[in-house]
Amino acid sequence: MSDETSTSGAGTPSYDPAAEVVELCRELIRIDTSNYGDDSGPGERKAAEYVATLLDEVGIESRLYESTPGRTSLVARWGGSEGDPLLVHGHLDVVPAAAEDWQVDPFSGEIQDGYVWGRGAVDMKDFDAMLLSVVRARARAGHVPDRPIVMAFTADEEAGGHKGAQVLVEEHPDEIADCTEAIGEVGGFSATVRGQRVYLIEAAEKGMAWMRLTARGRAGHGSMVNPENAVTDLAAAVARIGAYEWPVRLTPTMEVLLATVGEIAGVPATPENAPELVEEFGGAARMLGNVIRNSTNPTMLSAGYKVNVVPTEATAHVDGRFLPGYEDEFFATLAELTGENVEIDFVSHQQPWETPYDGRLVDVMTRSLLAEDPGAVVAPYLMSGGTDAKHFRQLDMRSYGFAPLRLPADLDFTALFHGVDERVPVDALEFGARVFDRFLGEA
Ligand SMILES: [Zn+2]
Image (cartoon, rainbow, N blue to C red; front, side, top):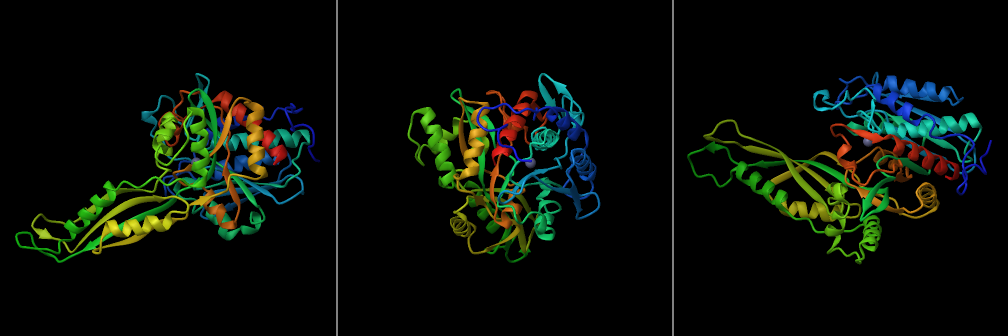
């Protein structure tokens, strides 16, 4: 059945897309899916089976995929047959939580002060719950979207997605490869700039270069002259890399965002005032300040075993992040900074991506947000970290992050990701479900 009237314009649907969102979010939080970066955690199987049951109850069939026992992802196909399928993906795993640091049990899903508290409340059982609430309400009311929707609930995103999204892309492409567009996490939330709510749609992600630097020299007695000291060479390289001030580089996504902020602040945006404009975002500036330039942070050092022995080798690790379109500049600069005596190899190397901020899907996301929050502004942004989108992009999908939340101006939202006392406002969850329902009806 198609859905022509219920979600267009400012109409109110005959069903309530937000009816279950709060309870589903709490239930998902109560299923501990902590990801320790290996297989020592509880895994995602229980959560995936729960999602399968929720979909099955409204007549939607799903399939579970496991790379290793317990590390389970789910794929389900639903909707009409008009046009190419849209992928909507959310991960089921969460980062671990140290309960003693929290005000509430991180796996209780407690409601306090108008918030749902718990690990995964914003990353990203909130969006998993929104998607399920909307789909179940629509399925029950017979309001199936015209466009085919492929839902993927993945394992292992918090450890790079190698046992989740990557498995789907590499081993089960038949499930998802016909999707031309993808919607995932870390976008669609509001930030407040000078009293104006701005919804940030993720349209790009930085690339990642986790590197090991190795200097090799001549071993010898610590009392003697040694111009080929590996520790000296490595330390100098690390100091240059850590102290380097990467120049401001604005990708198309950030040009649009900063122009939007400039308009609100009443100043034209330029590369020169980009750092000040980013500060207008308050707490979110921690993340946005790093997406107007490449970055390199030295994180680990290791060399030697005795104070009077010069070792043959010294190593360091550097967390490098580069902007879409600036990978060549990043590596050329890095080679200069490291110098000749230091070798670089990769612990992990992932490409950045950027989807042009235009087209029908952008229009629909914007319209859906403005229908629920008429005075707001919508703009794209570039994310400093990585998500499952990096894997799904391998199959040539236009990707965006769109998990809508209307947030209080004084909430330090980005600090909640992987943070202590992670929580999400109840009314933001309900808002998100209503926006996502409009989006799905038109997407
Ligand atoms: Zn996440």
